[in-house]
Image 1: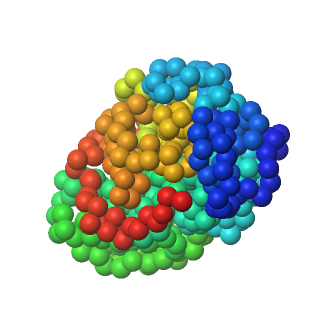
Image 2 (image 1 turned 135 degrees about the vertical axis):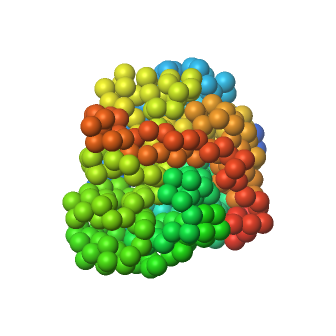
Image 3 (image 1 turned 135 degrees about the horizontal axis):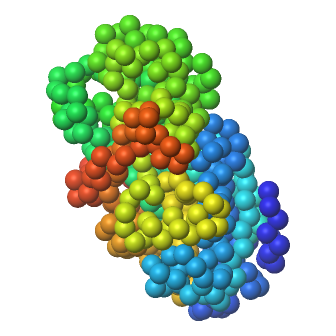
Length: 437
């Protein structure tokens, strides 16, 4: 874990007593001590809890690059701080210089929760961000809720994150499995036809189950597809051959591989090597640039959704791609865009609140509408803290067109209005956010 070098009072985390902070040095003005508020000294620390190893390690490495870039821009200007976020100055946040600590979740929910405790209690993090595994994100945001520290989720796609496991102190920019299924099912129906049979393999934890359930719902309700079977596979599986053999002999028309990260790259690669694609069409409902790169030409023709991609041609997207390339000489992934955006969204909310006091920052984020991160008009909904946003649907490029950094094409970007759902329906119907203090 990187030492933040931050002055602070250890043990403030979790304090909900009636200590009065004064203005906390950030203009808060008389709010009670809460979580790691007030901040002592001139530096505020962000905690980045990310998978630098394990099956989602590639995504975590790109997230860390984006977090570091966001901190650099918050302190010195540059990128979206200069062009897209009017609330930010490039001279810190409400008078504080931003520093950070990082920790490797190892894609393990227990390790991730312990990391969150250390980031909050040892390093005095005023905000925690991270993700890639939904079980990790759900455990971290639960810890953040208990300690009254905001969690700005990066990559987490399970319906439960802003459904039954939602918390007042957690916010998610990434769309969920329910959104993916609503966007992807019509495209699959148009491409492959109606009344087909499908077979699912899914990662055996909250995210895989969410995707499996949502795809079943919307493929049945939309193009009228029927499920032949659905089989759980352990996270971190290295050999999918027996699962793929069973799917291949099922007689189904389409195989859904609900795997992500290196697991997803392996399962689609092994499916193509086994000739499954000669008998069944393959769909990977969620993937990204590092995953497609690892899968190579096995991703050709495969439909899915991505959080964001540099091929999205608008000013915010192009500016982020340019800033990231200038810093790292590489094209950013969707998880990198999420990490960068969530860090700046939190900082901008602090500036609007005039304070790091958590309830005031939360209220600035709730029902906040924005269009400055490359995905069109969005709203961070108050009822479940889930961004209502567009969903890019992609298809892997033909093998002879795949080049370094260019693996898929955007088929369409499904508008937020076409995938949104009410606060009393879908995952939101199970959400109880809890108190502000």
